[in-house]
Image 1 (cartoon, one colour):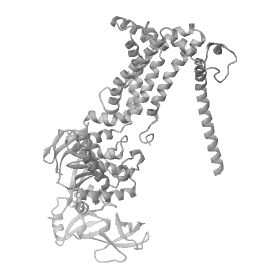
Image 2 (cartoon, rainbow over the protein chains, first blue to last red; image 1 turned 90 degrees about the horizontal axis):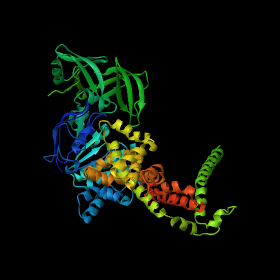
Image 3 (spheres, rainbow over the protein chains, first blue to last red; image 1 turned 90 degrees about the vertical axis):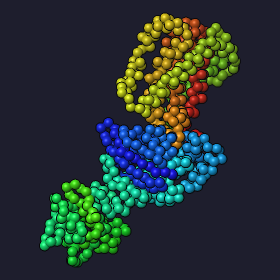
Image 4 (tube, one colour; image 1 turned 60 degrees about the vertical axis):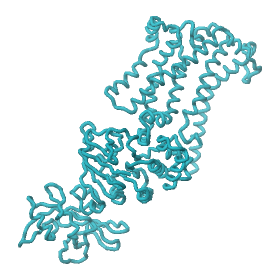
Length: 364
Length: 275
């Protein structure tokens, strides 16, 4: 296994900047997820690392070796493709053995390693079959088995679960996580599914328009998004954003919003008071808002618009002054449209965003 | 209600089969009579009314035909020309089709149209200047000249058919092959080619049959080394009836046999027929 280093890589298709001057390091044995909306360049970046696309500029290193100008077969990589790319004219055994055969490994070794990979993915019974006789989930297992059977330095995965139905995807996700922990592979995984990214990655690189906006642990990406886009892209429902104006009253910093005043803690207040323009967005996630049936200190009055019971919890859309916010409550919380409730924002979980730039600010 | 839709579906299916049977009979009955006649002695062929089943089977008519001057030679010529045509048009056409399917290159759309333009030339017009050119090049009355003209006729379809065949083979599969240790050529020979084989076989059948049936160019471009259809085109009309039946049979059989032989590839989708 090895480290992947991407240095200043650029790739354009005509006028489209698919990947724009990206730096990225994936540590040895780390599982990194490239996350972003479609067309953000995440798959292009992965294909550049695989050698399926030539970069316009920049260098790519796999395990300290400069592979930028090498064809895919010399990069010591393995890859799982979005549409499986299992060879239809070969049996499952021959599919898994494909990379080993190309390396001219001795017969016994091929047999053993195919068996091992098949056992890891529970496809031992399918080895004699052809891909046309397999279900989508089974083909996906074959594709993964083929990738882990070879001696690859890094494992690249391009939306491997996106073609599976919801239930199967959930099952395969957990199984992939177990498997990759077991084989300790350096993995770069592309997905547009934020849940997949949060649940699988050691670190997540969030991409948009050919650039990496934030590269951090799943928890940090979720709790401390680097900007407005990430806060709105990650999480279900997306983060609420309230328009706010920073003022100083009696030496205390106050943020006026359409729904009422918010009093930030002192370190945040100091940070906000240094802003050139006093406009901020108050970002808060649905689960960080407490819903109260009666007025309370520091709680903002709001009116219930829509109640959506989701089984494990209720999602309530509320009118908070001039803004709408989405709030999670426990499943047995009773609320009716038109009803008045009081909302208490968890001050420590607020993400303060400078309105002019869209950048999130965190006190040092 | 359920009964009704069921019976309607049954009627539909019966009609479809009836139609298929009618078409098959329409094709097979003349072939059957030609075959029966080819295996009947002279007096049976001339007799009337005809019976549906062969009365006496004899090789007399066929032997008469085969032993006629040039017949075996021109049959052999036909096979050679058809195989030459098939090989040359696949060797040129398949890579061209592959390029059309996989790459974006300047002039791609123009290329696609220019390919078809050779089909706009009637063979009559093409054959005469070609005959002159072939005479000058010393290729006249050689099988290769007939094959070359047949290639020119077959190439447009070969290129377009193979291109659609290769479009049907996912690019991802070849990419997967390169990731797992193939270079570009190996990725083609180990993955794209085997998967394209049924389609390529279909294209080959088409080319073979085209060359086998082609009369006009073969008649103009050769004198001594005629293919079987070209020779028969000239001679059959002036031949006795048994000879015509035997000739018809000889033209029919190789095409039918070739189709049966290669049909397996045509209909086989991997994993289904291999069961």
